[in-house]
Length: 431
Image 1: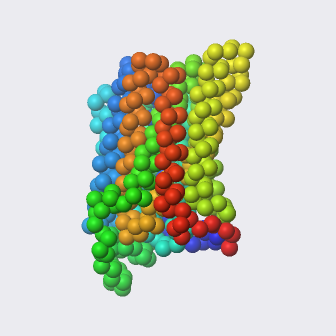
Image 2: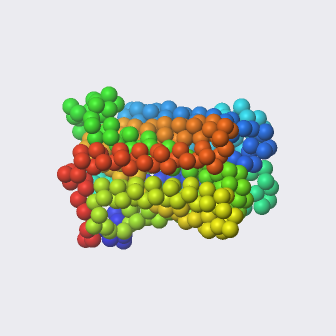
Image 3: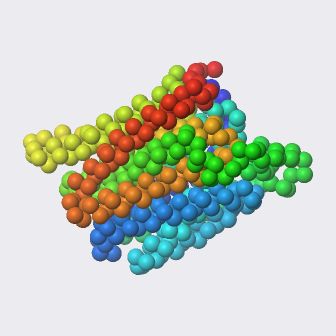
């Protein structure tokens, strides 16, 4: 399917979720970007920041469970508006936080609302089509928005810090962005045209809406899903790539700026390259026809992720060990960050698309489980790297990401064997 045809077939709600993803991409990466300022202004250790990041990730697990479960009981429009309203109010509290306790509480509650919203959104979007390729590309559209937000995050933070270096400044504008999201989600008309499963029934306001099909025998809940080999393999890969992606999001600035002592400017350049790689990969997945199967895409880019992390750590070691090679090491870190971004870019939409193809009636629950696995990986990355950075130094602790990337690449092998014969992996040739 060509890009123009895909754009015409993409419904209104998908574009609203694209905007939502942009705002939360900005929000998600901002914490890692302001970490040096936050640590200095509140006199925190790396371990304290690791605790904050871990609690944020674990709150996302709770929010994902909430989003996956509640999506089966209430109309999506009502839930969308509740989550956005909660997040907007909590952002006001966060932007005024003066103590670490208020900061933690705000981030935890925002993470719950955010992940519940995203779980609901992914579940709705995954139910819009029975065609595996189109479904994966619609899910990928949201990831394109998220990556665009993460790409803009260094510019967002730099613009605020040029005016005032206080860490809470970049969070102030999110209140306006979320209020606009609430307005975009308010019209009831787009919800009436959704052709959803029973778990995601349309708004009852439409008297002509067709009756939802009865639940199938396979609708056995989370326990049933976790007993399926393809789900277990997919969630293992999701947890490991969550460790890598969020380890980069949380700690790359601290690694370059404080672990390698290469300054704030180079640190933001590395983050910009990382997010640029993610955006490029997700645009390719969503809009560009390819003869590669989904399994081929995720395997090849997984190998690129491993090579990028190897180069990222090696370039840092080279620049520190050999002063004459400092410039080479600095350029190498930026280019390696670009490769890592490309390597992790398509993991979520392809993993979720593969799982939804295996259990199409379980879209909301599978979205929740996939996000939970990624959040667990993120929590482990925040705690392990934060604790070890206080003991070994950030430049050494950062190498844990390479080990997780190797595990992720190995986890893709059994997943590929389970799914390689599935129609979901048919080549996406141009039409």
